[in-house]
Amino acid sequence: MDASLPHTRGVRDSKARFCDCGLKIAGTDSHQVCSSCLGLEHAQEAIDDPGSCGHCARLTIKSLRRRLARQASLSGQDPLMSTGWPAGN
Image 1: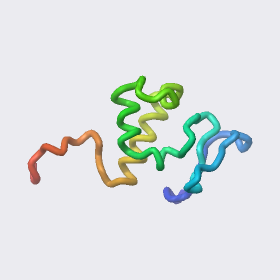
Image 2: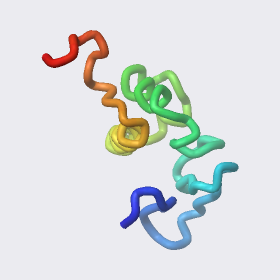
Image 3: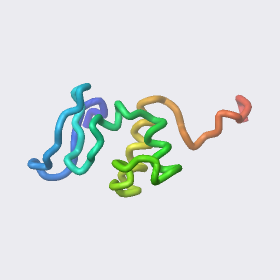
Image 4: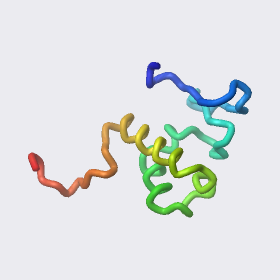
């Protein structure tokens, strides 16, 4: 499957809706925009501080980790790697 294509998993009648950017938002997600529009920092914050977003608090840790991994992949950044490490180490 092409990673650039919007998708939702689950049953066909999942009440998914579209974000203004055109990507899908799962029916179980109460955010007003998709995870791509929310971005990497939001995904990281949802894991680091579970109460920081009421919408994210409703999602499973598995879903939150998937969102973080996807955002890290899209941005080319690894949120688990410290930016303070010297190059080459």
